[in-house]
Length: 439
Image (tube, helix red, strand yellow):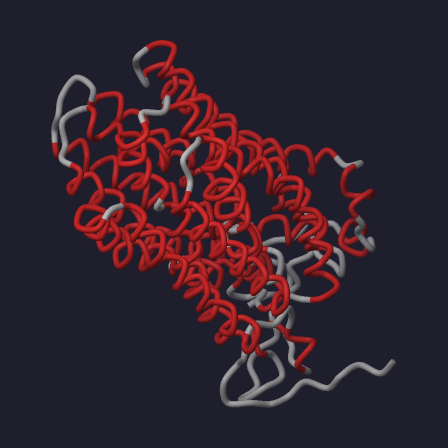
């Protein structure tokens, strides 16, 4: 079949894809994050153990783990315009169902399995399966912009949801979130697309508008890049397992803090409204964090961006440990800044980095399997942290473990070494400039 010629347009459709992702993630990820706001009033109403209640969040992640490879295959075959609306429907159904629960099992099956588990295609993992297809020059920046919708959504949604919880109860908040998730069904079906080639375009809008200098080659390992990667081939490489381990540790840290921080801040003496504001402020800081780290990663490399991001979670855990001895707003805002401005920035690298190693027609399937290990970490972290608290009456050992695993994640990504397969645009430009005959 002849290649589809690129369409010359004044506006690259990839930015519409980014805008739809921005809105979708702003709603879906913050609906999942709102578990942290629902957690205290549900504990108060039913009197369930913290470990069992937080376990509903973990169940959702662990259940979605089994579905991630299937979702990857479905996106490879059918595209996001069918898969993402289905996920939005499942999330909305769980949010309506949880308003009728009376037991921990029912809570786990609705808010845990359907809403948290069903959210995966609409969150960082699902969007990372196709957003990298649309950009090469500005891949990190574009993904960072799309993912920054989470931060904008958090500052808009989370304080509003907390106000609704205080005025009308947690069930009213769930109904509002169900309506928002339902709105994502037509949005994604009508506008979201898998790749520029499907519309006769090229990544970054190359071939449209005024001509510009060709991008220097980013390839370092030609034999690796020329291989038609399948899941089986990828799983036989050390790089696949280094990334898997890095993802496990990173999402363990991310979701441990996200699920438990609101209750922890209340435990050390902050009011519910102030704790909810802190959670929303983390998301707002994440807007800047994802954009600047995504842009930075396009200039200097994915490994350095990942190092900065995971260092943010180390600082976050240290600040939380210190808050146990000193209820200081300065420490609370240090926790917020390091988590949002640094930690949340790893999201912009989450899909870009594997795309540079395993790019190809089966990338979504490969990325889906990599994400299984991240999802396991995201599920184990909140559960184990809650269990450690139930056993010891303190978060100290859980936060120390978080620090260790964050450092391990940094080491794993350096071992995966995406820079030895493909350079990012900034690195490629510097290589071209210093090569014999370069500018």
